[in-house]
Length: 134
Length: 134
Image 1 (cartoon, rainbow over the protein chains, first blue to last red):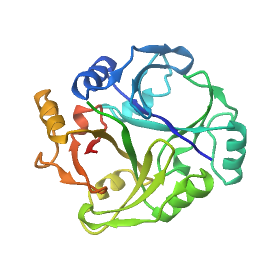
Image 2 (cartoon, rainbow over the protein chains, first blue to last red; image 1 turned 45 degrees about the horizontal axis):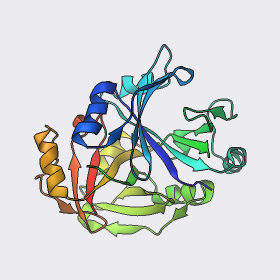
Image 3 (tube, rainbow over the protein chains, first blue to last red; image 1 turned 90 degrees about the vertical axis):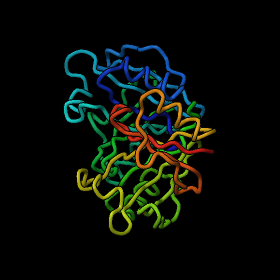
Image 4 (spheres, one colour; image 1 turned 30 degrees about the horizontal axis):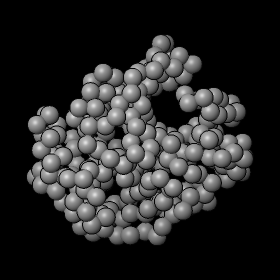
């Protein structure tokens, strides 16, 4: 069912420092910050040859990553995102297998303009999993 | 400098349950467990079209992931591994930029039979980074 690893998301306490680290120290292709007010994050994409790293920084009140950064002040790996062809079929299969879908259970339009869902970390070995329809 | 994302490693408290979750619930191609006594882990590789997920489970006394699982009993994302062409050149560049290399600073032969180094999570936004020469 799952296809490509679309991205690994890393929550960071200082977006400029993190961007500089990936650009100058690790020598990667680092994009410009993009505000995503609907998702409460500012995002920087790092393009690797086979996938992306997403740096996430809180935007506005009630950002979904604020709690994560409170618990992990240095930052840390926040989630992985797997691609699926049909997000409703994937959701129904997952629910039938007993996995919990976060929120209303209906896909939302994610930071890439495509339908996404998040799955409960307790059902996936402590890993927050995002599914994105491609 | 960094190239492909070679893998994302996830430490898990129950390798059989985690393998079943990735195989049956997420529908991925899950390999057989491989003991890596030199690294203190049993590994299960999950092949995605563009990269791999590595499930890690402690093997023997003093496993390097035991402390992580003590802190994260449900499991969690343990590290990301980026490919480099020349690991000694990468190390020297990183050290010149002020990043800390873990252990002796000399590459070891990793679970894939290739030279690897680990970088200090505090220098990379709380993310443990492995570099692998390919």
